Length: 286
Image 1 (cartoon, rainbow, N blue to C red):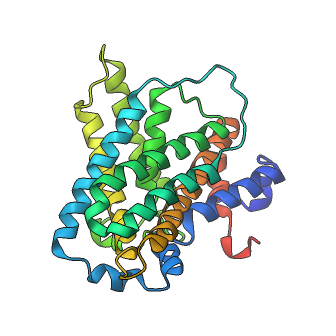
Image 2 (image 1 turned 135 degrees about the horizontal axis):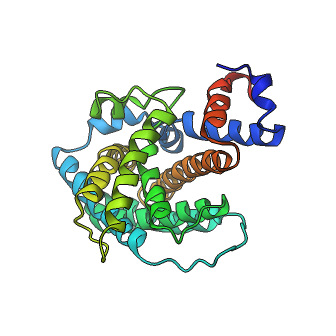
Image 3 (image 1 turned 180 degrees about the vertical axis):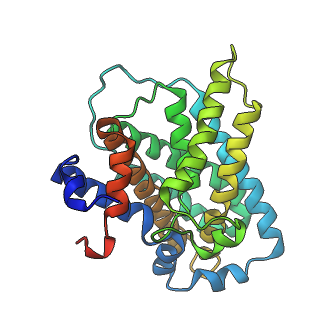
């Protein structure tokens, strides 16, 4: 691996700083830790309390939520060529998701099938907004599918791994951002190619179904953690606001990191950016 000084000759100091922020966003503080901070209780213990029926409810609600986002991803997007890259509206989307969290917190698991699709669609819109702010062309279906794939990247935690819950769900989950992204990128590319070859975008295209299944398997782990965090009794709507705010913040940070890396790759190429990313020591970054 090249020393960081030689990498700096390719990437400027501002770009290296942006890449360090991206790596910190992608590979530190998993969702479980953020939720534990919000509710003041270990998520592992709360997940053990979930009733058996919760897992089926979560799986079903997750799939419905991703299908709603897929419909948005395949729909036309009003974006003009050369649209200025304004900052993303993260706070507005946080407020919207906090509102849905209040309802979810008040009614618990029974509200999940109704609340999660709304929350996830709002989060998807925020991810698209972040992608646009980093120079992505939202008119391209592949870009919107790339936005959808962020829900499959949200399980990364710490340099080179996933949270323990995700690791249990996926035996080969011991990988870092570039490996996880590579697996999803192949699925996105195949789904985009399949859609492009059809006269009408089909929600049942095999490659598209494989992409959604891959994302759902990973996203459902984070949804389970979110539901567990809301399971503390007698806190209700207030807890729902805190949990949903932490939930969207996690995926907003993942999106910022992911699309920052993609922006730098468009300018400098994949190999220099990946080498610089791997050379960054988060412990030494302030």
